[in-house]
Image (cartoon, rainbow, N blue to C red):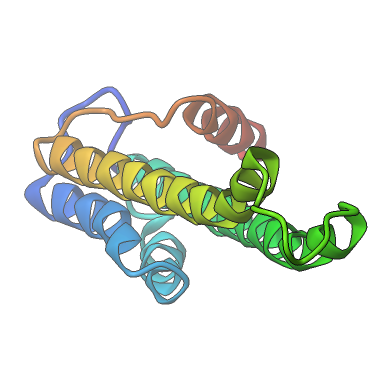
Amino acid sequence: MTTEQNSIPSQNDKVMAALGHISVLLPLIGLMAPIIIWVTQKEKSKYVSFQGLQAIAYQLVMIFAYFIGMGCYMISFFSTFLTPPFTGESSGSSASPLLMVDFMIPFLTMGAIFIGGAIFILYGIVAAVMTLQGKDFRYFIIGNRVASFLEKQI
């Protein structure tokens, strides 16, 4: 590997690392970009190898969180339809406040998924900007795990 992680990366390394991170804008499909970057550049630059593998791990976490969130949404959505028959209320009475909250849970869950997705994307954009400037960016928790994984590979 030609570029040390503590030395200044070349302009090409900065661009490749930034492209790996900015691909977070295209969830699921965008995962291919950091994979291709990591596979083609891992022997040429430690900086790009680390940033590319980190982008892959970050996007996999984002996809996993999305599927967990959608699972929670589906559970809340279908449980909303199962709740009214078991409340014991007759059709002539007004809706209870608890029943109204029960109908809002799927909307709140979907809102949380959108807010969480926006935070994931913004954090990926921050990573792209920092790596384009040549800084050693590390995602929270993921960065240290990727660094220890790459150290074990040497």
